[in-house]
Image 1 (tube, rainbow, N blue to C red):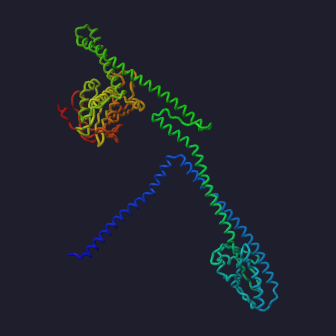
Image 2: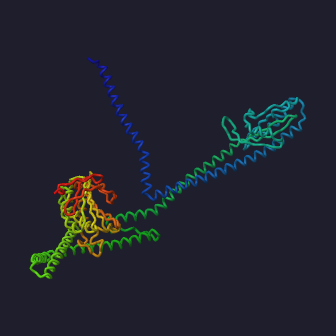
Image 3: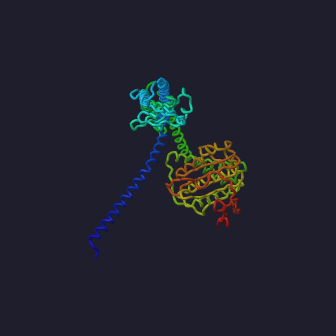
Length: 589
């Protein structure tokens, strides 16, 4: 049996391990969130940059102001530093020249012969060179020039104030002084340690002689006061620059806000107008350019509202007129059609002239009936009463039925219809009657404008949609015509010389049918190369379409096809690219 203390230890260890795991997961979440913060800030900045004109204006102005003020500040700081340094250098050179002359005169007029007197004279003379309490403190270094003949009466060695040695003097300055003539003096900037603090200083050197021995005399000028003045001025420049940038930012923000706010208000009003709120207007304040813009905008909005209202009224009147006329013509047309059918059935009993008249009357009544049906269908779409009868249907079978029904027209036009399908069956939620009407319209248009060339139908599907493309190799159409081909009563052939030409409502009705299904109907054409009409439908009711599985513009690649069939119709199934079509049962018959 396990001891209780061991169980407690194991239980404590397990709890500690669980707590450590929880802490590790929490720490990882915090770390991941911290790593995402820069990306979120960058995304927010980019979004703000793209969407806000005021933000861009203020930011660009601040950046330019920072660059300008920084450049001016650096230039002024350098100029001030150079001026202060040149002033201190000129003062140091003048004082050094005067002091060296005084020391040399004192040494030349010395009347002492004993060592004690010489040391006292030199120490007293060099002591007068110090200026510890002045605005520019000064110290000295007194060194014998090396490598010279040592006279017997050389009783003075190196001297320096504040225990300075020759190591405080740069070697380059010593070499310049040693190799020069006595009237010349040289200077160099050096660091000077005062009370354990490094100060900037200027070392000025010259030669003096005493008792036949040549010495180097260096005067060290502490310019820390000038550095303090420069630091204070730079601090003032920095403070003034920051304050000026903030002031510029505030001014630019206020100015841009006064300009951008009306623009933003105009954009908001424009969006409301585009959404149909035609009564929206801009507020007019003052008489400046913004006020004139607001007045012009309001005048434009009022004019657009009036014109849109007139067009809407006219459209409603037109729709009501079409609907009323269509319904009113339906009854008398039925009577006329019945009479035309009676005459057409009895045409063999008439003489040739009356027989031809009966046939013309029957054909024209049929065309009139088709036009009336199109007008009634358009009126249903305009009234919003068109409804779908959705059922799962095989769209490949629907296409085959359309091809069979159009066989006589294909024979009369001298065209053959070729079908390519990625699958033998594609089930789609659709209103078969409306989709069959759309496909029949597309195929008849292709045969009519195909100039006797072949017509190709491509069917393919992906996970979201099915596409059917109908291509002819006839006269084609321009891009502008392709953009208008779905307009009501529009025809690419105004002369209406086509044998099967209709009212110009077929593609408009087809477009409305496709819209009811939530699909696309698109056109492409090029003069002399034919045209392509592509139908794209969602596979399931209420689905969305990300892209069509069939290309709209033809690639021009040759597709393998098995020739055969009856009545000029060739049907093949298989893949769209590099696959041999398989003969179907209908072709075998």
